[in-house]
Length: 406
Ligand code: ASP
Ligand code: MG
Image 1 (cartoon, rainbow, N blue to C red):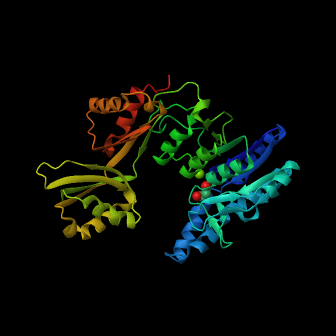
Image 2: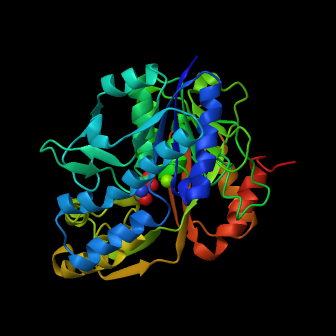
Image 3: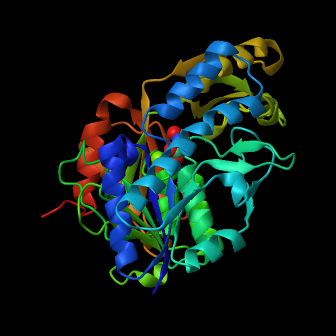
């Protein structure tokens, strides 16, 4: 007998038929003799609707009341799923976040889970009852309901699995696993059987929308084995796990892309100490995340060009902020460009093999795709290219690294 956590996202509980289907999936695990906790999201579209209500009533709403409102979607699904389970003879009860409780910090709207008390649900689970737990919800230090950020019920599920010492956390979603790249763009994309935490973390933070980034961090920290699988197809999905569990290691496991970034170039910035600090300080203060940065060596020792990327949503604010400081920063021109995409190749194999970056550069060169900015980490190489080359670049790289499905 194993203890497992199953998580179902919004599309998996989108209507009553789907909730009944989820109940059947849960029953299968119960019939296998497993102890099951289920974490659910709100029915699809519901959280968006709730967020919209808040915006309509007060554009600059009180974050605590926002959480009071947007956390309610999950309350509906836990009750409905518990009923659906009871209808097919499976003992079940619902649990709100505060009833466990799932304790979080007080950062309303994007709270972090601190601890989960499991005594209560464990006693029910060992008596043979399925625990149906609301995802996305926490209880803050002032006894107010918090939410964990959009997509947060993935994190709820992984955190609960860690707290329960579960053997596995199965995340049921509308895709059947994690792919080598976006299958909507590259028809030859392959579903991965296994992927390491580190690689999944890069994929998630680079735009693959399968799992909330924080949930992967949480899984990595607590070594929770996470399986991503479809709630509509009966097939094994992708296991996110420790490197040691993966026998056949690929050099590159996946290729991600993000259209969410925009490029900013400051032309002829003064080349003297403190300039980078003067540029990036105000951006950090304004909570604008800077991702890639390149600065050229100045030819004349006086000025140089500086290029960096920010989220597309932050581009206007960035242009305004730096525009106001044109005098003090002493640059000549500011050139914004949102017509870019960041393409990244990811693989643990890079740590021990040379030539991965070189293959990326030569593959793009063969297709006459110009690389504008490059950044690397231990297991990733990212390049910024013009957006119109997204498909071409992804397909070429996918073949070049031998990832194409046969
Ligand atoms: N219902 C929340 C959202 O839509 C949490 C989740 O689905 O993971 O963001
Ligand atoms: Mg989700």
